[in-house]
Image 1 (cartoon, one colour):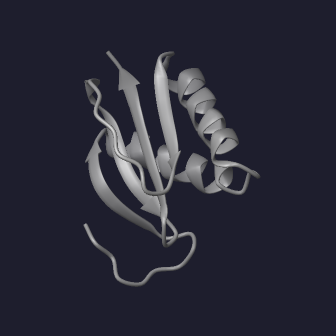
Image 2: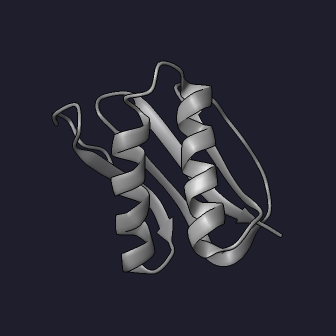
Length: 94
């Protein structure tokens, strides 16, 4: 989905293959995490929160302008954007 204008905290969904409640949790955690000083710290916080709440082996990527290819567990994947450029991927590895 392409969103032409939205605020620094608005979310644009790229792909979501997770339960609505889980995705809402992902958005909530991400909005808190992106306030941290670096993308690496934000990703670490998102991963640790998901590991704790939904069981281990979650991965999180936070950044801008990256590409990736991976396998994930069914119904455990989300790719979304927060703000104008921040891209977030959360998935549970196989």
